[in-house]
Image 1: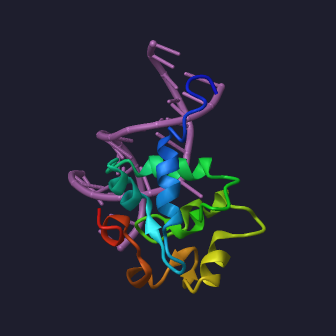
Image 2 (image 1 turned 180 degrees about the horizontal axis):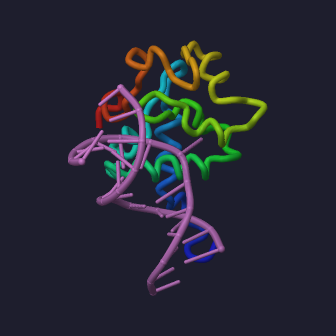
Length: 116
DNA sequence: TTACTGACGCTTA
DNA sequence: CTAAGCGCCAGTA
């Protein structure tokens, strides 16, 4: 809080969270897809970093964000009481060995679903 | 100010 | 098929 504290979200993370919040239940997306939608194509790392900042924000279903392989890479950062895999399974997502099985069917791409 | 890190993605060997 | 390296941007120390 130093400059323009009265301003609204001025972080790239906020945009990421908003997109993640738009992910329908039972669907998942990839870091690169979000990054590309925000214009930071190729900067998938930033999306993951944004998720790190989403800690404490229940409105950000980071568990619906996985890597392109459909692997729950970030589950290690989740709350041990609410594992990423369990949450996905609760929504109907089939996850085996931290890997989404029907990812091809539940994959949700913001640049497609939101269509720009 | 610079340097390093980071929940990834893709290309090349 | 698997393994490793490079590239991206933003935030924190």
